[in-house]
Length: 206
Image (tube, rainbow, N blue to C red):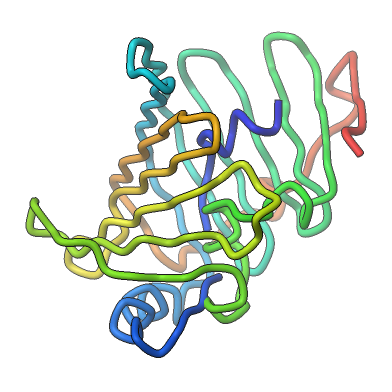
């Protein structure tokens, strides 16, 4: 179940070799003074042969370091929360919450980028991608080989992250488009807390 959000699923601390300093600077410049972020998103997930597509929409909340919230409004109501220690997946329809240790859940994922403050080179190799749409594109390859994620692409428009493409080892591709981004606004602490008593099932993944 956790894999579904990073087949997001839901967002982003990087680093690199000296040959890719310009690309690293692009990402680091975006993250440099980022403390909180709120953005609407559209998510499109394709299977390996592109014969099926799932579409979802919602709102993303980030508070660095270590806290985020993916709030899916459609097609089903689901909330994913990282509180700095664990990641919780709350299925509102099933009244069920599953949870996993955060470092384990985020290994090699885009969520590691935004949530962390570690140098980029700690977790990813970065290189530029030729642009075909006027935006600046950067490719990230996880250094951790024990992860489902094999490649991440970030698209920047006017120094704003507005697209993210992620491919996993099963051939699935997830595309996220971000709009209405608001940086460094005040966020309520309750956004990053889970209410265990609100569900029927609460189980641990590790």
